[in-house]
Image 1 (cartoon, rainbow, N blue to C red):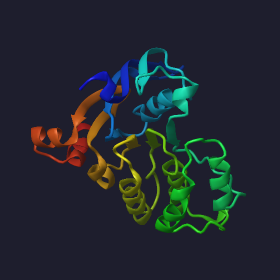
Image 2: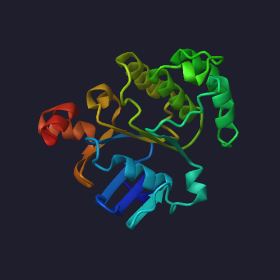
Image 3: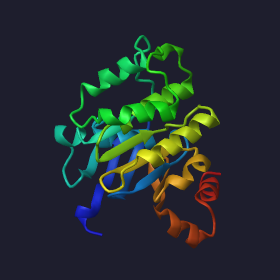
Image 4: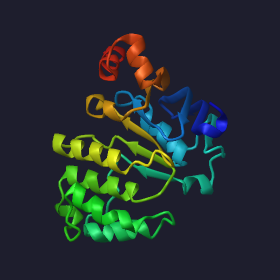
Length: 235
């Protein structure tokens, strides 16, 4: 596969904080049109890696190429990012949160909103403060999926939410993902709920890639599901 077929290429990426080395020479290649799982326990460096890609954290070394380009204001505009941390204004209604987010992005597709709201079971007139954690997670996903961004990064979108909301989010991703024009990385340790989504996976352990490859090839090679492999690697 040529460089032009890769949505994202990361080479020897390193990031060190005062008390921890979060990334220790990470290499990763995300083919265009695929969904990859960035898998690892809490503290493995997953969020730091995603933040380096989006430009929220400056790496200490290595190289990132996004759609063949070095990170810049232009590449940042081509990424839809769903952070693990709560980033919604609770005094807003769902509709206000949507309109507020839409004002920042030229690739916003308002035509997707009615169907997303209906599928996710969200009332546009409800205050964000009245939504459950699972409902807020659904809203954060809507704000990403309503964009036509070629690269989507989801950081722990299933963390701490109920199984029903997990199922909705997985199905929402399947319905809305446009493989002909988009690529996606989902950072999670909820592997059992998401394995069906992944074309490929990266196992990240204390800032180091311990396993990486096409999901089906890994299942064939090890004779196990990705979830069972995850349990074995991080036991």
